[in-house]
Length: 202
Image (tube, rainbow, N blue to C red; front, side, top):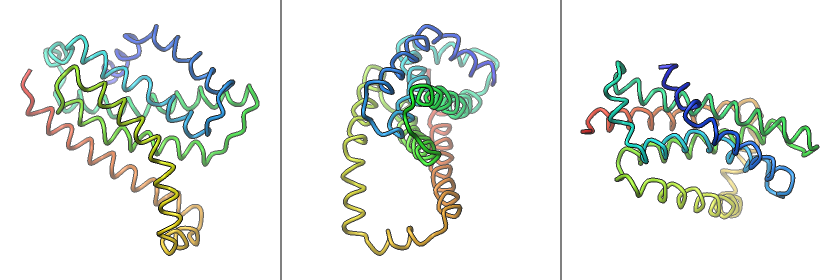
């Protein structure tokens, strides 16, 4: 399974070289929230892998290798976590070098948003027809980025009792609860994608 994860990096070595300057551009010239930069950095490799597979129809090749379909999907989900950690590390280093302030809360928020976004979109790569996937994912990412601010404002204005309850919780409990929720969503997505992929004909 590790070889499947390593394969994605090898296939994308030139894209990764482009990825670093793009992230540095957003860090240096952008006025974006640090969490957004962490999400943007995390998205690049995992979703570029799906785009590559869609373009080259590599699923046929993957299924001819000595890996089960569940292992192929596991490599996608575990790989996404590994790439996220590495990408956030690179982005954090870039922000530190260029003296852009960020907190561990920004890292946690960026990682959580990426994992939720990945959980919502990974199954789509197995459901939608090739040629439509990348467009749908890009539109979904843009829409979620735009709506996130409105959603937070709506919650703050109309769900004050709930927000007061959240604010009353200790920070460690709050973080632990968020981790449990995010990982539960990610695990459910993993299971759903595995079931879809195992029943898919290539």
